[in-house]
Structure formats: structure tokens, C-alpha cells
Image (cartoon, rainbow, N blue to C red; front, side, top):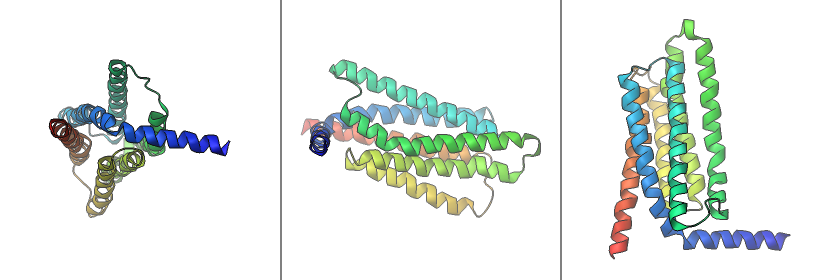
Length: 215
């Protein structure tokens, strides 16, 4: 059984190496699209003045579900075009690597949303800080951990992007620890990192892929 397990892992690693260019090409539109969703959600939430802590958290959890569904749709469409199965051993390895941090982000978001909802009638600055600053920072760190874990099975760039999210989330913990942020702060953080940063990375993948193809 150990020999079979080692052979399967070796085959998975070999497949990942052979298809690294394909995964890179597939990741570009996903990052661009998710970035557009993140940036659009930040603008929409701010314009609609969704500032109450529990409403803010629910808004972004729904946005995350929409982004995940959109990413799955794009992957599914690409697999149909390429006439390949979507749930391959390499894909399973990538998803399982990223899943723990993503699930932790979901559970923490739901727990904090429930906590702030109970305190609706007595919402003070502390609850606003937890929802608009602490939770976005936690999401940055956990999303970065998910990217870094998945990046161990993909190209090096996705691991670097993961470190950017982790370092930024940790750094913002220190900055906002000096005072309670304004209501727009949470939307600025989410829009900048889950919107603009992911758009920038998707554009980088797209442009470098074009350059490599031309070469």
C-alpha cells in the first residue's frame, strides 16, 4: 500500500509539473473575475451604507459565496473546453490544501456575525472594530494561508501572493490597534486586497503568459 501511495503522489506531482503552464493560464481569468467581484462589492457596500457590524459581515460572506461559485463556473467551463475532467487528483490536492484556512475564515466570520447580531441594540465601538477591522484582517491572513498552501502544488507566484496577504493582514493588525477605524475602513481593505490586488495578479498572469507564448 505504501508503494501504491508513493506512486500516486509521484504521478500527481508529475502531472502538476507538466500542467503548470495550463494552470497558470486558467488562473488568470479567475483572479481577474474574482478581483472585479471584490472591488465591485466594496464600492456597492459602501454606497449602500452597509455599516452595521453584522450586516457588513453577512454582506462579505455572501460576496465570498458568489466569488467561489463564479470561480467554480470558470473552472468548469475551461474543463469542458479542454475536454478534461474537473476533479482530477492534482485539482483535489490543490483544493484540499486550501480548504482548512478557507473553512476557518467562514466559521470565524459566521461566529463574529452571530456575536455582533446579538449585541444589535448595544453596538459600541468595540463591535464595529471587530467587524470592520479585526475580521477583514483575519480574512486576509487566512486567505493568504490558503493561497500559500495551494501554491505548494502550483507555481511560485501564488505562494508569494499568499505571503503578501499574510504580511498585510498582520501589519494592519498593528496599525488599527492604535485606534478605531472609520466606517469606510473595512470596505477599503476588502476592496484593495480582494479586489485590486487580485486584479493586478490576474493581469500579471495574463501579460506574462502572452509574453511567454510570443517567445
